[in-house]
Length: 458
Image 1 (cartoon, rainbow, N blue to C red):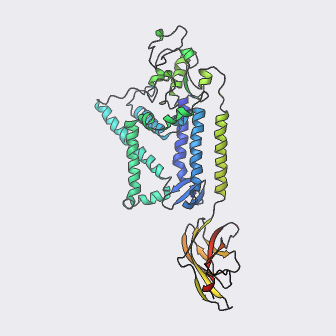
Image 2: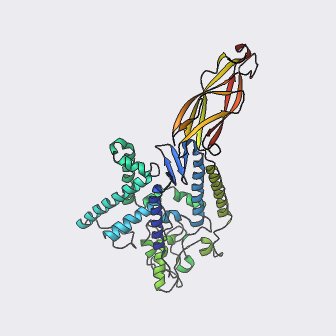
């Protein structure tokens, strides 16, 4: 006999917790796997740093996340809820580990319906200890959540002077407070009444969605079409019915449902009922009556469940397209950013020291940002050979992650236009680049050069 679903689930909890706690500390060249950095207004994704102006990547991430949840639900029901959801993991830590294994408040993990007797003084003390233990873990969980928005190295630096960062640590405090209330008092009611996912699942399910299903043909009918219980004891079932009405599948359920009643939105696919029935029926040398399978296979008897079917293939295809687009756009990340704004004064006119034409100058404000991890020296050029750069006259250095403003003056000594009625706007292309790596670190921006009407330059 292989591992029970409970043991497999606990292993999954360990993996999910390790990933959640470890990812914020995993960096490559100072870049995180995922970090939406509010302090520096940056997005770190797959160890690449993006400025907030590059947040066009976020919609791809959100679409992939929702489609991934839809795909997971179509294939395995609320498998995320039972196997990876923080709410479920936290409840298992508190109820099964702290209350049952460590403090002995609950007599058995297999009975999740019976609450401890808190009228006893010893149980009141144990309850207080349980709350304090969970409060410590809740604080760590709250801090871990913030590490995806404020990197751990910055968080611990701020922790040395918490009164200077009251907003951040107030946020951590209230998250921890909510987790304490949620896990100790709200419990699985969060899954049943608050979480919107349970309402979405019924739309996504089909006959081949894998879930915990009671085999009514073998076990016997416990509930009628109106969900009313018609059999409380084994003797009330038909002679060939295999269900012993031991209620093991009911007492073990964390959301307090009876899986024999059919599909219910409260079911989180934790498969505790499958393990319970497997144990009981195994003692009778019979296969379990509660299976992790589909209604096509168990109820309709129409053959094996097909995980790869048009609906799931469609989701996979869309996710693959989104992933390709994300990687493609991410690989084309700009290592520098440049915004160009024209000054309020359109132009100025002066004498040309060389020829007979007037010198026309245009002023701009260039906002440069070095989004690379290294310092670079920058300069730029104009694609129009008749328009020259007056200021700045030489390259300038920008440190890694730094933003600077540069007053830029372009001029021309040539007659670029001759319009007697109005000023003429001439499109120009500005190519900015790092002088030490012009092939990789470069951007092109469109701007305009305003040339005055003819009577202004006579």
